[in-house]
Image 1 (spheres, rainbow, N blue to C red):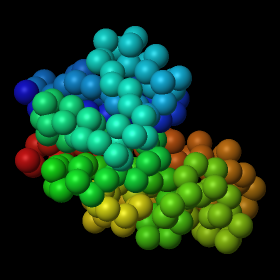
Image 2 (tube, rainbow, N blue to C red):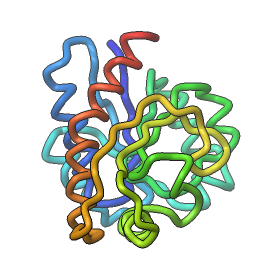
Image 3 (tube, rainbow, N blue to C red):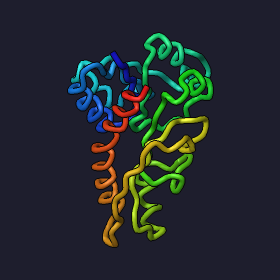
Length: 189
């Protein structure tokens, strides 16, 4: 059985989409949702889907081995970041080489790095007059948004787009491609 652990900080729509996708894939399960926010919507979604959860704080994540030890016990085939904003510590990246993936709401290397998430990314894309945007699925390394690119999906940026309308297009790409790419990565392990 292939085992996925999801990391999320927010409402959890991407995490839920991934979990629902893998309910229909034999031999793969989303075993846990890890979150750094005890009040995040993703925890409610996980509960409704009967997925175990683990909540941690900054100290547990950065200053101890608690999160790393928990992951080592679970032994995931893939760790999937789905709206998780903290930088992954080097010790975790080294413990799970090429087994941590993230999705970014822009075409990296443009519009990546610390602080570039959500509407901040979409506003920057619009402000710079870009003709297209999209998603980048990439491996995680010790720096924000600099891991090797696995997949990019594109959408047009229209003159009338706002951060909200562009976000809607990006979400469609995320929901369509992220579970599929995760599944391909698992098949190729």
